[in-house]
Image (cartoon, rainbow, N blue to C red; front, side, top):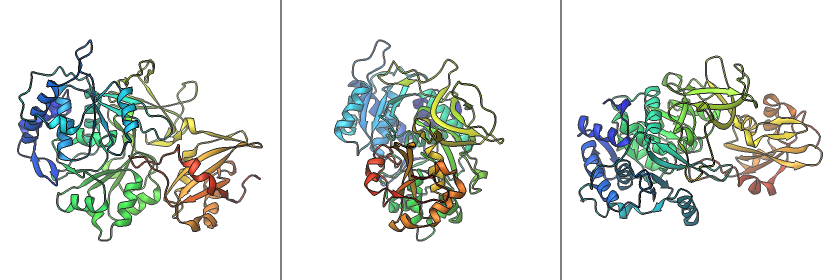
Length: 489
């Protein structure tokens, strides 16, 4: 069995224990634990989990567990033990309010347990082999919910390992590479770091709680060379880097949302190779990603499709769009979700096995994907359709804009007007270079009529902007943005 053909995450871990037993697996404040030691401890915990697992369904699959997890050693062992025990896992974010955690668990039919309960009988003997197949649910992962109520995606062993193998092929590990895990384990981005490293038998450097100093330590003390980050976190690290430490990283993988060109340029100037990517929970993280050779070249878009992923751009009737024409982004391939937990009424894949991502975008002649934004966030103003993501990308081109959210407000004359909330200094509100820049990048109807400058945009636990709460927060601070050629208000 090769890493690329492991059928379950447990099988991939067992292979790592056999072939790389003494090699570093989990590195952090606890020291270093090798793959053999990890597998032995995981097997013991898996036995405990099976001993008190809930009642199985008609197919023999135990009820899922909902566990609050952090990127630290005990939690990683518990996560892997669920994979070995064949118990689907709904990982919860530590900062999630109890009421929200309870609702998520109930929606997935999951039993709430703690890490401490999972570890209580760690020395117990396994209580028999688990019934785990490639099609078994591995993780139940809430969608981001940045623009709507989250659903819980059912991600199988097969899908997650297919995604991990494809990204490992696109971003191959070097002999000394170690991936720094700072992303929440409640998010597919954090989970994908784990599956990629287990499959490749490469060390995971654990950062239980993100801070700039914790990342520097993960690099200097623990040898971390790679990092996955949303743009806001990458920008924080850049702003805090007083000694050129980021230049030691061999690779930064940017995801979660479009990375501003200014950020990518700043990373390149800092000597930090950064690649753009595109993916979502339902595709087990990245579906498209740049190659290492493209890092720092500041090419537009999010890279090309990973091996096994088919990206189609279609119009509203489902007909294929020609190269360069925007439309709905559909994905197909082995790394897609099996469905939504507790929502048998929702069928995420069409008759051809394709997932409608809900995003708009286009493919260029080189096969690179250019994502414009969410289809359900379209603003119709004066009969013209405006994609907020396109306007946000233009706003982020201004050096004073750290991030942006664009939304529509009802208007008697135009139906809706385009408004923006931007993260930046107060002086940006009256900076004439901002409307001047937008006049060169956007048609008149797409330029924001109102803008609010905020010291910080509201964010979800993943670091992504909370789009739902932004309009209410920005409303009292909205002011007219007088751009050249803008329609009369």
